[in-house]
Amino acid sequence: MRPELTLDRLATPVGEMLVVTDAEGAVRALDFADYEPRMMRLLARHWGPVDLTPGRAPERVRAAILAYFGGELTALDGLEVKTNGTAFQREVWAALRRIPAGTTVSYGGLAQAIGRPKAVRAVGLANGGNPVGVIVPCHRVIGANGTLTGYAGGVERKRALLEHEGVRPRA
Image (cartoon, helix red, strand yellow):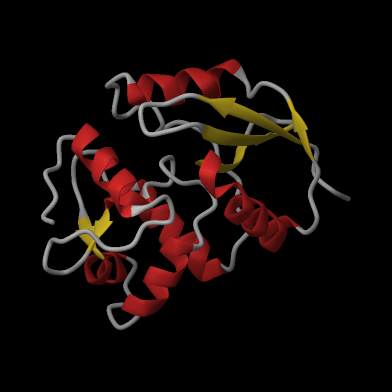
């Protein structure tokens, strides 16, 4: 059975965000409007064919996203997300949620944190397949030398998110 999903759009300082929630109010996807095709691919990969009904996300979800961009950096911490990746991906995504706002970790550090120090590339792939960006803060993962590396929403957006959190990334 296809999940009943609602698509909301929120203006943020880093661009319009797409917020996909289910009937229970859990966030299934969060991405930037200019990456909508990527979001749809990830949703299909995780849940099969989906239909998105335009509407409003629950007020607590909208409020948390807007509060985060308003400076309450922990506002997203309590939001429920539902992902349907592999066990390894879900392990990586859970570890991402434990990275506090205002801090970064390298891909190697994230692999260490989940007890798989040799899985650096796999951690990078799981990071890139995260369907719930910003809430599952994949933007907090940087290169081993402290430089910014790829980000599904674009490196400049990654820089803006980190700077919003008080991190001054290297070029």
